[in-house]
Length: 317
Image: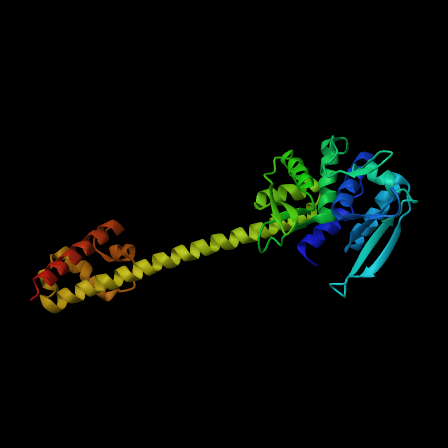
């Protein structure tokens, strides 16, 4: 099961007690995954489709609790994925689809015609708790969150620009920096930053998914830190090895041309130690001297040896 499916399963088990929050969540679910079917003159059937059985149960319960309507539920094979079922919650005109559509702010009707609206009615999301419920319903109906092992991405896919902008506005009320793009005829409201995805999961109530995401973030951060440390240590080791090889080459060149006896005693002493202890660090070389000197002192002497070797090279015919 994907990370997104687990998060939806968790949210589908949340049961709001307040009718206003139930209505807000149901409004978002219908807006995101509902379709309208003409059933005669100014008559509409409402069909809500989901592939998640937990969401289907939640829809059935919300419609029953808010409107006292017992809906018809049909199960069909997904035509694209033969192994999966799709669940259709059907509310006919006779059952009260018009009442539901008016209450959730989708349908405006007069004597001669009806009009479909795409904005989120302010009356449905007046309070913070109702805004949270609406965002939860929007996620259940048409949202997804990526596996945090791969990337941080949360999105809602809607069919209208008006609704996408309204969703973006709701998210901004919670200080979330949402963006809207158009993708293949749909409008996508999305978040990309890990902190923002965590905040949104907290807002909609997916606390277990939030903790799992945070665990992944911690593990990824630890791996990144370890990789940085290893890379840094590898780079330092490589630098040390290269410096040691260069120092030995300088000393060998002096030894083969004029001899180490031509070096001042302090330089000859460190040169002989470097040849004898080729894998030793500068600090370790300094500790072998009598009296011992620090790393900077050893480095200074080795630079002097390098300069001596470079002078020899420049004089060579």
